[in-house]
Image (tube, rainbow, N blue to C red; front, top):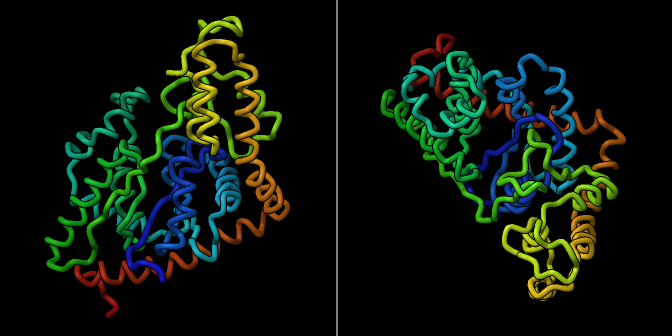
Length: 335
């Protein structure tokens, strides 16, 4: 029996998903779908805040993301997969919510501030980008979501969501929306293959769930290890070594990894041997996903139909939510 709480989560379709996505969210979604009613949104509208000049890329990646969902084990019989732009009620609710938050409050959101600085928007800040936390609030509550799996850097969005829905409930004197809880993943953040703090499509340091065995091998061989470990017999550093970081996370044989660390520290263990082990570990994990993905990819329309049928279900839920909203706002003119 599933818990009464509702999970809402999703991804922007800006490209195929990678190991960082799997570790940070996808694996958790597979587990949560057996416990909660779960909605997974392909956030194409949010992707357009960065790629408004390349909508064809966003459109193409909707299918890629959906394929990755199915490949990792997200089951459309247990999880409703839907496309954000096919739910116009989200846009309507966003407009209502915009009256409940000030521009200065949006600019104080630390996640927004960081992203504005990273993207160098300054005076060219698009209004659509500034208000995306408000749209996210609408994404969540349009399906009456109460649990949102997030990284720690996204917690300010959950705080802002609760501020908005609390203001709405107070203003119209009825609790239409329940409190939203951000569920922070306890897994470590996966660094990029270059040792950068985060695996990222934009940094070109990612291993994708759709990568071939050869592509995985090539990327692992480029991984950052210990620059001072020049000869096999040289003692090496484990700390900051990306290969050991990945082995700690993905290699199920913990005792073997512990011995490899000791061997590396005292010298006599080459980077190539270490990397070959990691290649085997990652292919054991990703191989079955890659095979399932290829199977689903043989019928792309069937895959799109899963998202389209899920979107129809969400439209029914969203319509009921907006009926409640319009009623308390005295906008139910036909009733």
